[in-house]
Image (tube, rainbow, N blue to C red):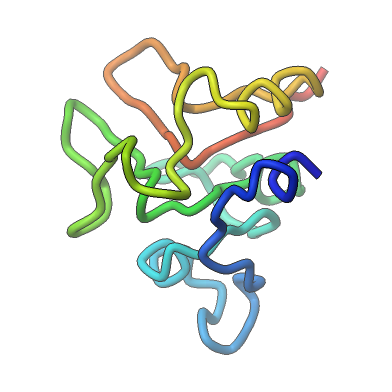
Length: 123
């Protein structure tokens, strides 16, 4: 609801299982596609991602990239708070997810940020 009320730009919402992506998370992210359920592991591990059971969503991943040590994961992707559809600390979208008990990857305090990522931790 808050996304509609705030007129927050979402590029697309196509299931990763759709034939245009064939369960390929990289293709989906390059297309700036917002996705939730995706049965996959956490990168570089054998552990299932929170996306694998629907407890995570990535919103506009091209404009809200995963950044580690100041290097964006996607080619040509970047984080620019002036671009519509970019998730910014203090935005209503962040506070709404947090009020529902979700964690935003933009608040991670180590050498990485995942601006696209919201997840609901297990209890």
